Image 1 (spheres, rainbow, N blue to C red):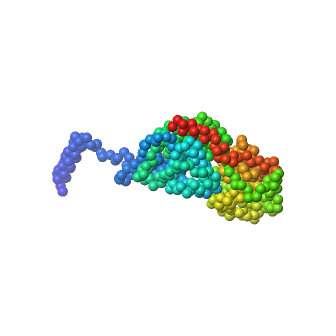
Image 2 (cartoon, rainbow, N blue to C red):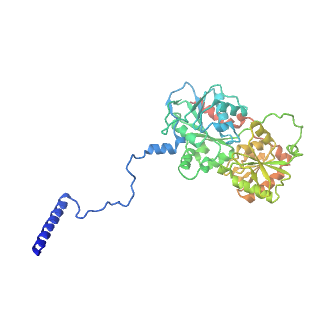
Image 3 (cartoon, rainbow, N blue to C red):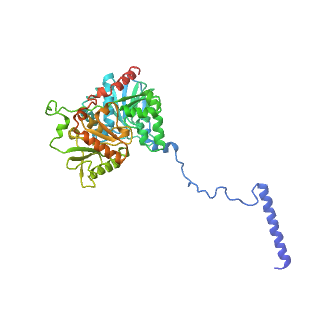
Length: 447
């Protein structure tokens, strides 16, 4: 190609570039194409967006309202809401009687005020046989008018075909922070009662669940029935609503009549003659609040240091699931899973019980063993004062050294007739729940 041909070609190319430049200016496009501002940020592939409502329903399924319709009743009615009923079949050694105590309270309140009673289970079917068995073990006759409801089959959005009829005269009794939230979301009545058996907020990790639980503990529309004075004091110090609207109660431990009358004046200590002393460890490895590892370490040290002589002591564990244990000195512990009769016999023969706990709660097994005359060794936060203090708990800081020292002190008290003979826990639930039942009577009268 000659020189003039090349110049002609350049002129044509320049003309084309000029036309393109003018076109870009007329259409508002930049002279130089720019990449997207966030081209480096990964994006979600195209598809249907996630529903926030569905996400929250899945995350907080246990807090969903009970599927209900508004139907008014002629008089007050009591509705007990539990997370699950199956635990009542093995109470108190499976779940330590959370459901059992609530069934007793609901039954007593319904009978005292002539109210129908409904029992709602959220995670399990609501089986009458479980309820009747739990009440029979406590010596409580069932309420005359009882019905059952379960919403375990509700869909992801909390809907199901069958609805719970409820109105402004229904009194709701919750058994956990989860069921308390569900009751508040379901009830048309201005108040709900929550049976509190532990510092539930303290047992939850920092996050959404704890924030929601603490909001309920600060809710002035809730009446709190709190197990033991110490737990009540601990919660009331942090939550003014508990101080204003809460009532402590003492758990009762009805004892079966002895098969043969004891010799008049015989001390509890004399029953240990001719056999090894019995130490019972409440072993719940799946529940962090029971300080299972700390208790094991203290027992292992106590045996290694000669605080507890295996020739003089028998070591028992109760709890599920707890493995068969062999301590450093070769001593073995027997793991028990008794039925109710065997459970009563076990507690009546226990001399010393080790039951550490991370919160201001003494568990039902430890309190019942104390009511039978056992000496309780626990951590300081869970050594209940008031009437329980006279049952003889030995409080310790939650360290191995402190628990070993407490085991030494507790073992020395085993043969103290004055300490062992005192068992002043209420033997009738009507006495333990007296103040709470008065509150229910007031609510029923104004329903």
